[in-house]
Length: 604
Ligand code: NAD
Ligand code: ZN
Image (cartoon, rainbow, N blue to C red; front, side, top):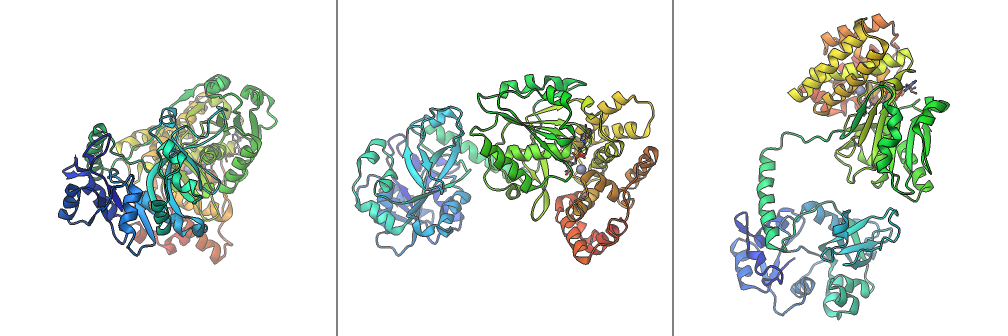
């Protein structure tokens, strides 16, 4: 039901204003209809003009018989004699009402506590104090099951403690009622709190009804003023443009980076401005450094800052991320000032994931995939101590979950700050230096030979590829130069795959890692050694590098695998569709069959 009053105090006649060639109310009606979520959609109005407009454009409208104070009364009168279970109130002045929001508000009636719910409504997270304190913005507070406790035009709760981590929510005027709750509302007189705040839904609370709130991230534009209408017309035009031309992605990058031998000493002055009173910095540090007093001293933890030493023996897991977040929450009442990762790809990925999961509900495994993260991460800083993965610059954090090995790939993943100090890599053992360095080389080969390649990826990829050749094949670099160059190769390699993808070696290496726990760097080398067919030039160079540095690549890992293990390995590898599509093109399924994959794995 879309209640539609002609006279609106702030913007009279707004529902009949033109929005991209149709009146606002017609746009709203069509948007509600298009969601296909409802058996019927009606506009309920006091206006002949609106009634005729809707009927004239093929919609259904109902004339109100009586004068009404509010939209709920208007729709209550209209549904009184209808046989309905659930009535959804869509605001007439919200032409961009999204399907997702409506699905969410209806979805609560399928939840386990559905019986308790009289009505459902939506809320969105707000952060800006201007909005939080604006009386035109109705705030809502909820209990732990998301049942509404109160709605107000005042900021609730009042932030006496400015550091307490509290989330403010704005109420969105979309409701789904059980018919009975709506009819009760219609018959019950207004009480004082509703009258004072002028917020309809307070009446339900005053009569003891249960309002379940769902969190939505869809913003939409409400049309309250002529300026809103101008914005809405513009948004509509932009939307049309977006659907015509959405083939280029908009990538976030690391906004701040320091480079230079010894720059790690500046750590505390770099992160200092982010420190909030009483809110600690959490340092996740590779446990190879747990007795390195010099490094710990240079980290210079203050106040209640916390150092957590983490083993990189195994690749990071979603359960490990969940546990670290839980521990931090249990120990500190304050949201951390920042999460600082100091280590290789394993620790950097953990730090990114912990920063994300601190401000997002549920388990890290819920967010494995592309663009599933809802809220901005806590401020996070990456400090590599071994070079090659590009994890310091990438938009992903690779995690092994209960069902898959897959990154949390999102706009909120990249670090807010990176500190590149080549001297931190001094103690890396030779084999490990090679394995992780080859991750960079392989990133470049896969990106440069991929079908997704564009000039952006290519220019970064070529630079990193050349640096790798210099580092791993030539003899004229000093150790110091070599460290600095590998650190930059890693960065460029990471940038190259940002706008492209990795390929065959990575897909297969993920399979090895999932089933056998093989670590990423060495796993890539094991696989890449057998990929002449796909990357002839790259693999030839790789073999030269391997020879030159006298590095052993483990063999015969797959000789005793069971069918079940092979199948799991193949399932994991094949699930990484974007990687295969980049490597082999759209018809990759015809090229990389299960048999072919098994044959390749059997060589390893
Ligand atoms: P790592 O972090 O697992 O570290 C490898 C070993 O080197 C560990 O034993 C560690 O203790 C040791 N080490 C690190 N720095 C050292 C130092 N300065 N001195 C002595 N020892 C040191 O290895 P990695 O290859 O950097 O990272 C692999 C991980 O990175 C994998 O989990 C992989 O999934 C991930 N990865 C992520 C991305 C991304 O874009 N996010 C890209 C590639 C790889
Ligand atoms: Zn990699």
